[in-house]
Length: 384
Ligand SMILES: *Cc1c(COP(=O)(O)O)cnc(C)c1O
Image (tube, rainbow, N blue to C red; front, top):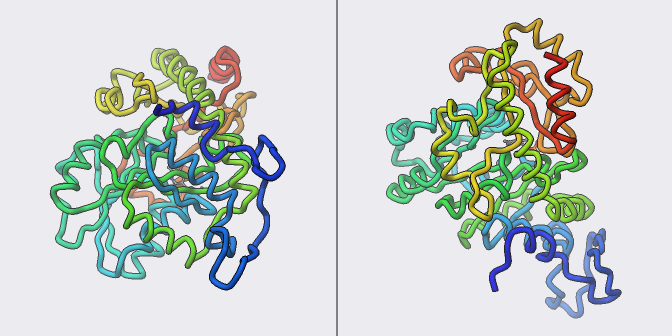
């Protein structure tokens, strides 16, 4: 019988240790593995190429994303880099115009120097993608919802466009996690996560992963993983294995709280604007309702909310007064965090581009944690 998400999260990759019976998998720190004779090993020879703890995590996360292969890396950025490293000089990639700041930076300042060609477009309108497709376009790389404007792109429509043009589609699913959106099911070729965020979920591990059902792509990515060597440590893989067991509980809870808070703030006099895909006023609401689904098929809108206050001074005051929220980059942890993307995560994005994408200095991004919903709301209200 096909197991459900919560059950897979706990059991896949988590079989009891055959030697000792340990219910929690051991962490295999060994860098090298005994070979029984020349050319005969037990599936592992050297930990850069493969490690049992890493294999367990990759099996677990691939099953949660409805993929057959998971290839993990030491950070989200090294996962994205591995995807680009499968390409050749002259290849063209179309990206969402407000992708994660680090994705923009690695594309423009590293891979463009090595001959990859990038276009950044507003992928919420599929016509912008169509008009930018060239004979050398190999990938479309979208983030939905985007950071921090939470713009929603239609994964299924874009995947059909890709199919018709022999282009592959990658979705950075970091903002929702596999619990709240399943891009492979919607037609994407590859899903990327910064496991640093919701998948790790406790702000104590850095990592990245790519998941695919495409065997050729999977073996290309494995080759890059082994050749370049940006692999996660066995301990990090073990932490991630532990974290995915509670992914459904964490993301479910923080999304429910976020929905409640977004509605409360939407009518607050000190808040100029609330950006949250769960609000009917959000331009991507209808698509979000269709594609952001829990494994049981319920619409879910995520734990990230962006709010625009009246002035930079109001933001500074708000940040001083919050007691539960910590001012910090990153997101997706059990604790609520707040950041000013204009000054923090997006500092490497040129000012004219920040203006073009509509990212004002007065915008604050909230990552809602799993503290009690009343305490989170009251903290925001007293700070406002
Ligand atoms: C954090 C993040 C990344 C980069 O991941 P790291 O683990 O920090 O390298 C990529 N995309 C999104 C959407 C992110 O939030």
